[in-house]
Length: 426
Image 1: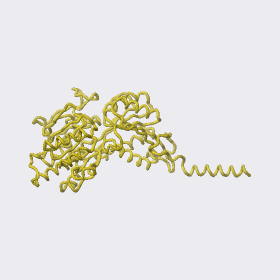
Image 2 (image 1 turned 90 degrees about the horizontal axis):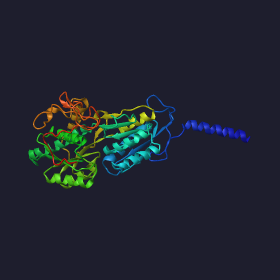
Image 3 (image 1 turned 180 degrees about the horizontal axis):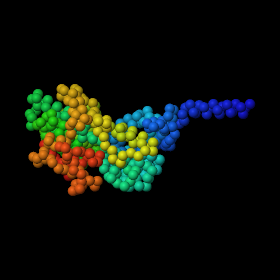
Image 4 (image 1 turned 90 degrees about the vertical axis):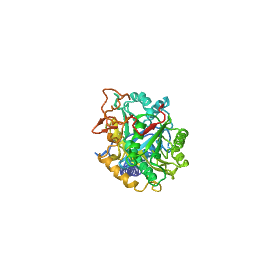
């Protein structure tokens, strides 16, 4: 009788397990690991009803989730991708290495994540890539991604990748919002036309930063023709004190609006303390500077993370160099601060965004700017070593400079008229 009861109990348990569909996965913040289950996969990348697939993903971060800027924005991408993938039947276990600087510690972090069983490792800062590339050859079955970089897509390692987004499109839109505010101030008699000066806090004089502040300036000038801009480089991606000092100095030079390509909120709070306006990056900064910050722009990394994780889970290859923009949801604006934005800003942003998405408007239309008084007719895209070369691709054609066309990483490094570089040693 006991044997009959035991058999019935075993059958009952087996049926219950089938009905439950197996393991449901672990907490995304856990470091306990989990193997990918390749069973029950449907053609669209999801899983059969009741079955869950698992993947372990590592991320090397230059900051942490509390920086309210660069790494915070990556965490938003992680959260969005995790939810999107869960709906497809994919559970992601994330393992993070926070506050990893651009030095040999980054190499150690990549090794630790590889040894911890991560099937995909993402490095989130420009200077991480050279250290990641030292590790990738030793782990050919793991996919390595260097965000905002350019060496991996051109190397001979099939497991290394680059990714960026057309953030210059979002910066152009933020510039439009800034320009409308400046023009309102001119029209209301608060400033004269020649006092419409923007101050820009830049990390380094790299193509990524130059491309961004140039597109921002062009957006502002499209609605405020008299605008000029001063750029102060601080020599760091994330130095809250130096960013605040730069913003303060720019305000003291007469800049009435501050923007930034740096990781902290201090340019926003400094602008507010100085009575200037502000537009941000990576985060909605209206919470810390409600009287100053008008709008911001950011990359929505969830679009890319969802794509590559799904590929790895399915055993599929993905691009060695990926780049998308507004049209694909990879670049977005933060909420408009209607309390201080110029009237009509929302409608104008909608109009300009539609023109960029359709291709009607090219941000770097060469008829809209000059270099030393002349229209730009030739400019070579950067080669994979980051240098101008005679055999590089010609980036100017069809009346525009085509940014991030030949590679995802920006290569616009041209000093255009109307923008004053206060320093360039970084």
